[in-house]
Length: 258
View 1: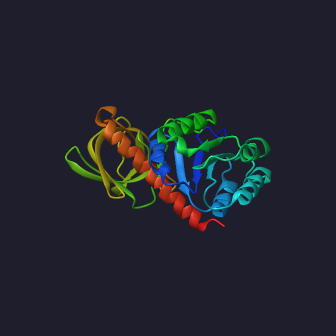
View 2: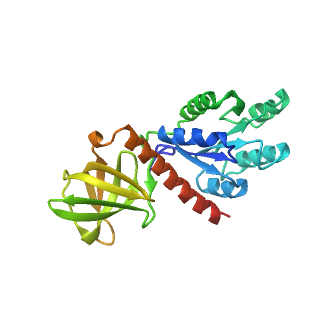
View 3: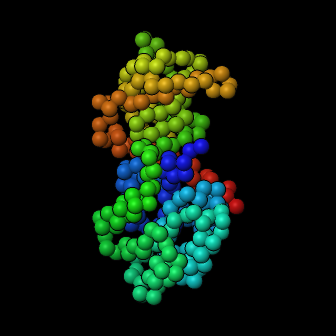
């Protein structure tokens, strides 16, 4: 059994103000699994299925003060969501009594953050908060599961054009299935690959690190990217793509949550 949080925690920003858009993408580039969400009731349903998460609530949107106090209290008293760790954000400094309500009475574990201190300082505080709450776990890279048709890989290998579907992606590697049930041995170099993911193209190289058989008899190849082919620009693009795939998947999940 995998230890809770070992693979990292999902981090949700509920009703995020515009200033957080840039900050969130930077957090993604630092390998935190972050999401922007805009429906507190649907989020509560999502959290009931995966309560080992962090939620930062924008107090300036969605509900009034009484509503947010009630929402947070329900999270912490419901058995399905009591494991969620909450932080609150605001563009407006609040009175000491309001701060006391969240920090002392509701005991929000992730703090009370005033965003008007600036993006740089906000970023610093969020990173420290996420690290203190072990948001990365022991995971080094955030992964994104690619729905069918979202990602393809193309390359020439030993004079033959190869095509594969991407099923899983991170900034360090991917899991793919070759067309035609092709099997390559572990250690095989794959040079000059072109990844096409949701309209974005990235050229890099890699090698087959592992393979496994699927129940349908097909083979999944785990490909690690060659570090010499992944410069800073490509690495940041990969991290952004992973963030956007995960965000799109979460958006779909939120739409069906009840």
